[in-house]
Image 1 (cartoon, rainbow, N blue to C red):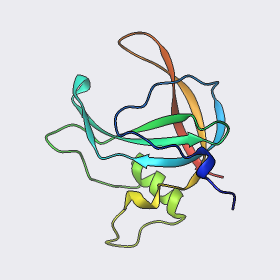
Image 2: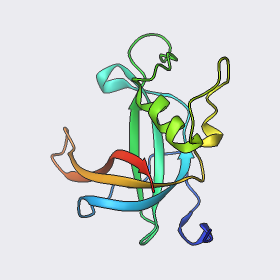
Image 3: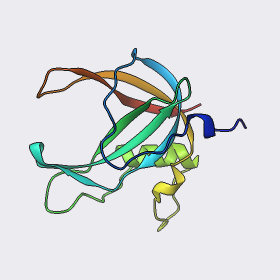
Length: 135
């Protein structure tokens, strides 16, 4: 297995700079799974997962919806994006009662489908990870 150090930059837990790259499929490694955060503008909880693209180390993120309310939704049914991501990273479904630790996701290589996203406030286009799959 090739070394991933070349494309695993240190990630600040603050929002990384939004970048734009050509939409498409890219090999990427998960470098961070950040704790749930409130997206105040939309009154919705989310969890940001950062991926470093193998081609140049660019960081592109996927935000996983965790619902509305006082606390983030921790219902991890097979229909949720977090459940799907964890299963792909672990290569299996969780066993009964097994915690779905984000540490199982970090450092795993994926194929990331990068797509355009329009920023609703300033109208700029930036890149997001739309879908992931195992390479």
